[in-house]
Length: 151
Image (cartoon, rainbow, N blue to C red; front, side, top):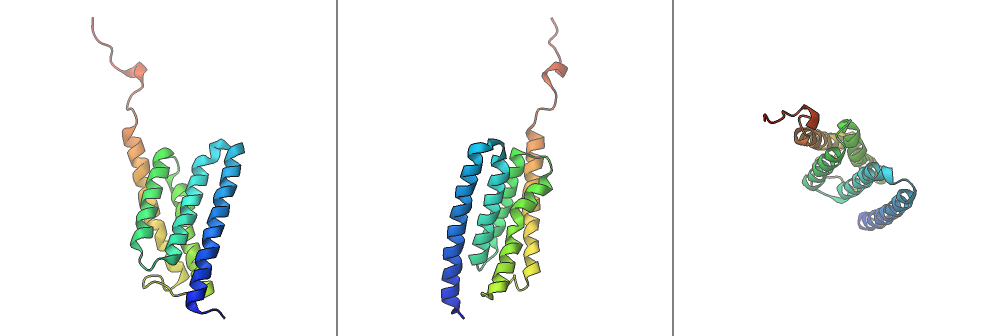
């Protein structure tokens, strides 16, 4: 069995290279399907945040990243904000399962793999805040319905 330090270094090396491969695969897909840029961005951000959470001992940075990623992706496309939150936030519990399977040291808050499901909360808050901001910033009336000046 690997020592904890060596196992952690292995997780970092493998995780980094997997993220690089995913980024390369996304670049190839975008060459042919440009309309998928936002879902692929959300997917990559979720994977990146899950990787950061896997290595983090404190929950504040991953939570802030989930909040911000959810906000900006849902602002770009506010319809079905919960889907963006799920696509971004599901990778933190997945990282918790990896941490549990590898028996790496957990943070004080993540003692059970299912506790990572709490990561969906900042992703949902960010996504719905982004959708609300997009809704609030849209024009209220179409140009045809605007009042015409009296002559």
